[in-house]
Length: 107
Image (cartoon, rainbow, N blue to C red; front, side, top):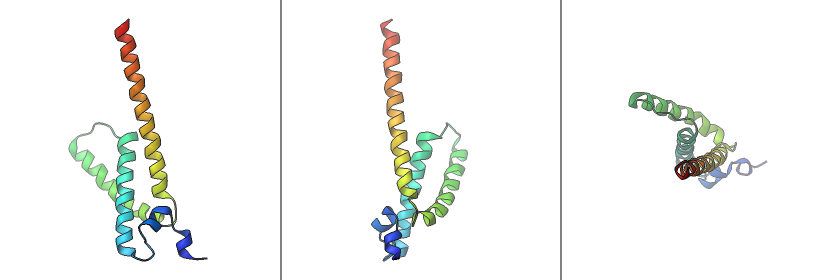
């Protein structure tokens, strides 16, 4: 079995098999950005600046490990799906709150 056939979408998109150093950096940045988006949309709370810095540093360290998994497993693809689901949830929540506020005003 060919290794190129087993690569995930983003790993093959960034050509990890032909340009490993550049491809892995692109994959790392992709996983880091998507993880930050998912964290921000789903789990982030108002925290002081230092605590936010610590969280994002630990997130960056964790994404290092996830990047190695993302070469053959659909880690980045799963983060894209999670981000889309959370975006849809946030938009619908905002619309529901807006409708509720309008209903309160009309009463």
